Length: 333
Image (cartoon, rainbow, N blue to C red; front, top):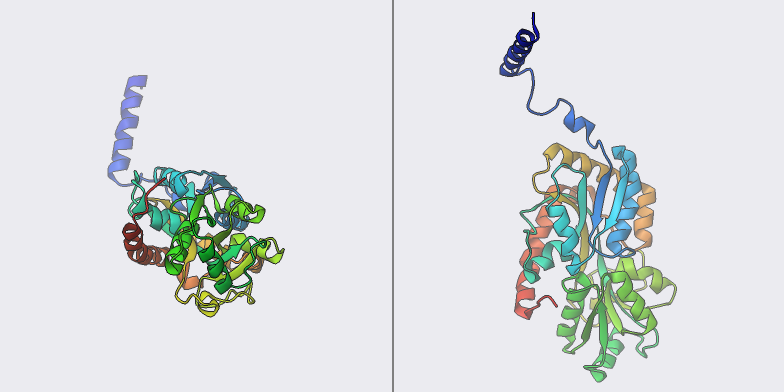
């Protein structure tokens, strides 16, 4: 049999095998072999902040579960929309994921003209943690409680300033809501992340911050910032001495930041399930739970760690916050 005849025979055999269904369109065992390469988790805000913290806490136990390195990469800009956009445009193979939060996946959708949809272009994977904010200030301010701080702000109207992690960040929205509720104009100073914003409160460059607990608690405990109230109906388990806003004299001032793991739209459901299982295993680890508690991160119960629960939370937050943002006419700076 010459070469031409042998080639024709091989093609005929291949066609028969395909017609019989012996060669599936996707490799057998592809889902079981995921991940075959390192996974990148994009953190859309600066290193050192709470998003960065939760990503790095989870990276090692997830590596152990998935068998591949987890690379945490900070991609900053436009209140997290640059990093979130990178995830939205990534290949849906489960190798590029992102930590999203109320800022990137709720607030930004009402503030920015984005080239992606905060709901339709992502696959929710798991709710990771949540925490309320703490109203904190430079210790040099004379106020010792929330009512005293509000009185001081009223006497320093148009001079007082609040640091934020940028337009659309939860620290920004918390400061806007605080300012509205107390009826005082406070100059908002944006930074590229919560960590640098808090550093300027500590340095006295700005006066206050409505900061996420996970970012502020280490500095509260060291005395570098003074806490006034937790923006929730219950006190923090990791800081039970800080009163709630209801207890401190500003009832109903609530804002909670949550963090979720997302992938690009179109990821296979079996890969999403495998990632969610890795997250749930990590969040059940006592060492991970201790590290989260130490920085004020509350881990949700297992039934709230699912893709479905994260999707439902995101929809509820959009319904709550988008009308508030639009009524306040908040725009990118």
